[in-house]
Image (tube, rainbow, N blue to C red; front, side, top):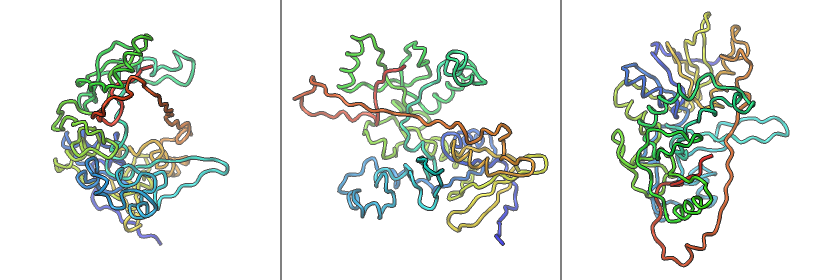
Length: 362
């Protein structure tokens, strides 16, 4: 019979997942003096060790290439530089797919989750994004409006630091912006061409600092954001939220903890979280007064569907039967072009931030 270890104490709040949602919950709660326990399926993050934005190729074992490097570093998709990124296939965490179906699930397994490596593009929804059915007759309207959400956008932007300029464009609402990132030479040429065609091409709204915010240094334009950011100039939940919360003494972080099920009492209230300790492959239960499920769309759905009981035969919070359905991924497409005006010019440093300095809004 499986031995389950149960925590003797009852924790105030358990937060599952340390990405954007979990990090925000942890920061807000600990700032208010509440004791929080954070469950993260991956290991602890050490930016000085795990982020490699200033590492030269000759400093890397196997130079980050080839089968030997894949075996040595255990990250077949991304190699050495992107160590905190995650995997399409997580070792020891397989999943099944229905016959004749193809589906790839990218998962980040480290403190801070995807916020350690996402593109930092930080755009607001417009008024009609919240009311798709009313405007287009498609989908469903959100239960909140842009006017209701705007103050919360302000709060988030002022905390994480978002670059940009106020343009008065309905599809790209203005916000609380830091100074914009100066355009590079090729971006100036793109802007000039857009101006001739009457197409708006404006400074990007990016969660990368052009001046210091909350003790995080301004970006030094090394252009290596995909390798992590030791100065925390590029926003991440781990550096901007969780590490400060740990300094309060109000946060207990449990790493290597794969949440399995939410346990409820006769009244349907969550009383504990069952998780698997990945190091020992044992099941543990942590009792709590409240729980925040912030494990990303797919993982949160998995957890809720696993949480079945006589009261919730289809899983917790699934009275609609829609949990785990209707998931939509983001879709990208890339183009490249040749700019004759740049031909024959001397080489110069145009690193900037890791990503675009300008963009064309809808």
